[in-house]
Image (spheres, rainbow, N blue to C red):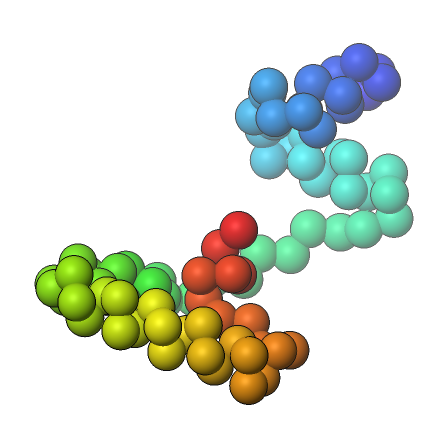
Amino acid sequence: MSASTAAVIESGHADPAFSTLERMLAAAGLETRVHLEPVDDHDAALDAIERLRSTGERKRVAAARFASRRLWPGRIDRDQRRR
């Protein structure tokens, strides 16, 4: 594979076939393993609950999150993981 092709794939401007991905990984000394799991809709469920909250409830929750970050600064909540 040419360096220019790899650069296009790495930049996100191309979606390589699975076989191409396998070749790239093999060149890096890695092998492809696929692991299937049930869909985790945890974040979607939390987002749905958030949309049901009133503006006042959202402000209270935001204030509580802010306070908890000050108490436990090393803790990462789900909003920070998505970024």
